Amino acid sequence: MTIPPSGNTPPSNGVFQPPHGGGPSQYPPYPQQPWQQPPAPKGGGGLKWLLGCVALLAIIVLTVVVTISVAGNGDRSSVSASSESEDPPRSGLASANDTGPAAIIVEDATCAAQGPIFSTWVADTQHGWGDRDPLLPASAWTPEIRSQYEDAARVMRQTADELTPLVKATPHRVMRELYQQFMAYARAYADAVPTYTPTDNYLARVTIAAADAVANICAAIDYKSAPARAPLVTPHTSPKDVPGTMDAERPSPFLTKNDVVCEDWGSMLKRFDSDTIKWSETSPDIPASQWAPEQRQIFDDVTPVMRRLASQLQALGAQSDNHTLRDFADLSAQYRMGYVEALPTYTPADKYLANASIRLAGLVNSACQAVEK
Image (cartoon, rainbow, N blue to C red; front, side, top):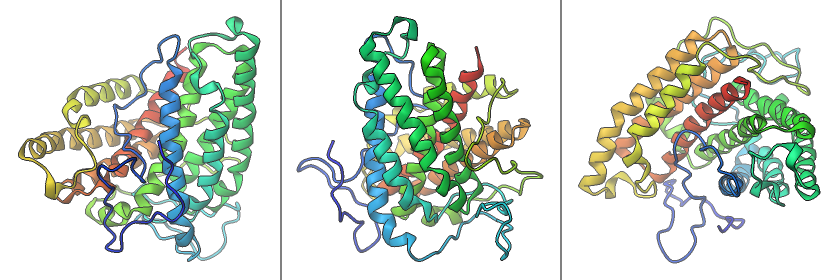
């Protein structure tokens, strides 16, 4: 894959149009794929993770390129019905007063800052660890494999430390939670390395999903899909209560025991995966204006499936007493509905809405699997 060179920006008309043919795309590939990363087979399953990270790296780099010019204007607007006051929050968190419903994020100044942090993390974990067999326990590691895991653990801890300023700076509660859960699960995975068992790989999956969700949220902002589609989505009602403000530097994993919704969550996503096979095989780089009748029919058929998923996400989130899980469920539902509402006038930039939704949902599923021991 070719990383987008510096200077790539959307065309002047604001419509995202990736090139077709003539060599590698200057834009990141569409990582539209089933709801979860399939269990890695022995002897090379880590390649799937590596390919995912390369895609994530491409998204992050384009985010840096486009967002740097945006971040300087200081606009932190969002469709979220936040109750931010004009007074600085006492907690030191810009998001401390965001108590409104989770909603599609149309602006976030931390998008520029997350790019270099996550891109360095991805690059530094591609020296062998990305090709690992996650089913191999620590007791069976060679010295070389152990060194790869130890290097990955060190990089994860370092990356977690570097996210602290972003936790404090983002004005959006759920964006803060994504940064914090990357931090919490990255450190939990690093702590597990000395006595690693295959179940600990789910900690890494949560970490990866959190970073990937952030990257796609920022890409949707940068390529104008988020601000274009957010007004089309009916926001949820404000939650009765919101997650407490975790320690900005030492957040905890949001799921430490099996949640009441975990079993249904996995079943919901498996059904969605099965019901969207034809859709997942379509090209995301063709705008609606150029769809063949067959492709249009596929998108028409998948629309009620996606509406059902959004409703299920919101319903399951409401059943949970875990405030962070509920925020992730609500935000995933909002991005899914943003994608659905985009379909009549779909442009390739709208793929990031679907990606953000599925990464958020996959994050919760992996967190559930991490505690199912």
